[in-house]
Image (cartoon, rainbow, N blue to C red; front, top):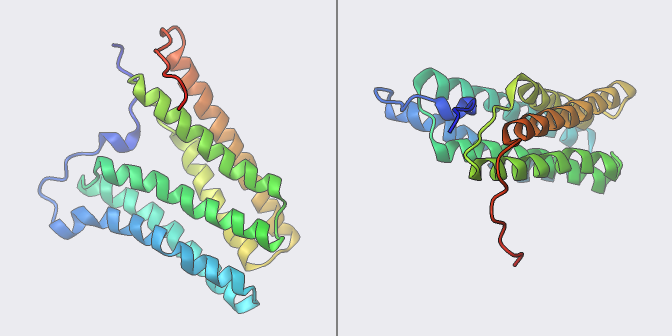
Length: 203
C-alpha cells in the first residue's frame, strides 16, 4: 500500500520520559472543554449582557485550551489515540452546542447552524470511511484556521450582536465550508482508483 500523509496528531511520539501529570494534561484540557459546555449554554440562556459576556470569556478560555493541548502533546509526546478522538469530538460538541443554542435564542438563522454542524458531520463521516480504507489525510492549515475563526466569530457574537461580529461569523462559516470541501477533495483524490469495498445492508 502506498504510504499516505498521516494526520499530524497521529504522528506524536509515545511520551516516554514526560512527567505523568504532563502526559495526561492534553486529555484533561479536552475534558475541560467538554465540561464547560453546560456552563456556557446556561449563561447564554440567562441572556443578559453580563451573562453573555461571561459566556464569551469562558468560550475564549476553551479555545485557548484547544491550542494548548495540541502544543503540549507535540512538545512532550504525550498524545494518545483516545486523546486524539476526544479532541476531535470535543471541539465539534462545543461548536454544535453553541450554534444550536444561538438558533434557539434567535441570534442566528438555522441555515448558519446547518453550515457549521453539517460540515463537521460530513467530514467526520468521510474521515471514518477513509480510515476504514487505510487512508488518513491531514486537515492541514486550513482546518486549523477554521477552528480558530470559529472561536473568534462565535465568541464575538456571544459578546455583542453588532455588524462587525456578524462579519466575523460569516467569515468563520466560509472558512468552515471551504476547509470541509478541501478535506473532501483531498480524501477523494487519495481514494480515486481504489476498488469499492463491500457495503453492508443498512440496519
